[in-house]
Amino acid sequence: MQDRYGHRISYLRVSITDRCNERCTYCMPHELQEWLPREDILTYEETHRLIRISAELGVSKVRITGGEPLTRRGVMDLIREIPKIPGLHDVGLSTNGTLLAREVEPGTTMARALRSAGVRSVNVSLDTLDRHIYSKITGRDFHAQVIDGIDAAIAAGFDQIKLNTVLMRDRNEDQLIPLIEFAAARNLILRFIEMMPVSTTEVLDEENFMSILAAKRMIESRYGSLILEPEFRTNGPATYYQIPGRRQRIGFIGAMTNMHFCESCNKLRLTCDGKLRPCLGSYLEFDIMKPLRAGASDEQLRQFFLDVVDRKPEQHDFRNNYQPGRKMIAIGG
Ligand SMILES: C[S@@+](CC[C@H](N)C(=O)[O-])C[C@H]1O[C@@H](n2cnc3c(N)ncnc32)[C@H](O)[C@@H]1O
Ligand code: SF4
Image (cartoon, rainbow, N blue to C red; front, top):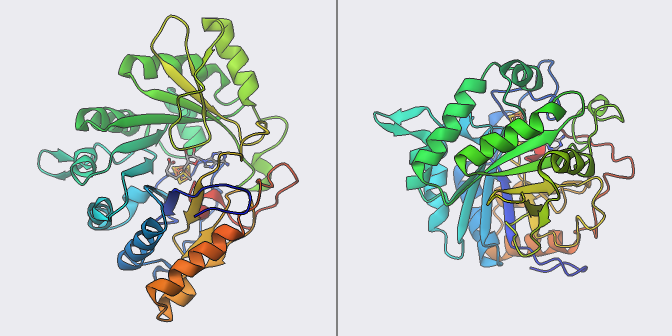
């Protein structure tokens, strides 16, 4: 699939739930969250069918996300089936890490079950190593579980584990170096992400926004000039660098300040309530659940995908006062 600006779509991010066991300030509000009713959520069969159709159209990588995907009941029933879909070479999962160390059966952690099911990579969100700051950011006291979860993921032997840190001035700017050391000790890739205006509007303002450039400067003042690695790419928009004198790699995702951010975009998103979104940073979304439940054929659904890709914008709209009606938790980050 290719859009009118030359973006080749090979990556589908699939949100399987809008629910979460945490309450990150930048993702969802603290007040009582209204979850979507169950009948408005795609069933596993429906999700599987849409992923299969996307794979027939050239999607080769799928990342399962949410909300917190590991909170959905029976999640392994879906995840086990996805790597079997012809054409998919890479299945990943984004998680807050809180449930990775949980035993799903005696002697088997969730992380190991995911690995055995064919999941190749996991991205774990970790904004701080300080338990109190962690609770402030996420609204929950789950820091220890997350660290255990990361270690369970390492023990499970994924091809790749990445840590994702959302940059917040005054909240975790003093955590960047400790996080780098934490990632180094475990040989993990760490990525710093600029906060995007996809949650409650008051979250993002001049006071708490920290650019990737500011983070990079802070890191360089400790380690010296970072060495750009233009050849190294994962599947997303991150730019990677090596820390001088180390084999450690860190990444920066600058949706707000990197003007080339959208050039190599290869993504499409499927929300848990059956909307296809050609771009995270645009209000555009198209309801594929409706034709799906009205009995559309595979061919009709394939055409739906192609039409959505054709509407993919050249670039996101975050910088022009994007005022989302939806929270990140509902779109799937
Ligand atoms: C929405 S979460 C879903 C998966 C899982 N619950 C987790 O936290 O990793 C996916 C990613 O989006 C990031 N995220 C959420 N809200 C964001 C925002 N306003 N700006 C930038 N990143 C955000 C989270 O930090 C996380 O790394
Ligand atoms: S970022 Fe992830 S863990 Fe935090 S509230 Fe959003 S979905 Fe939940």
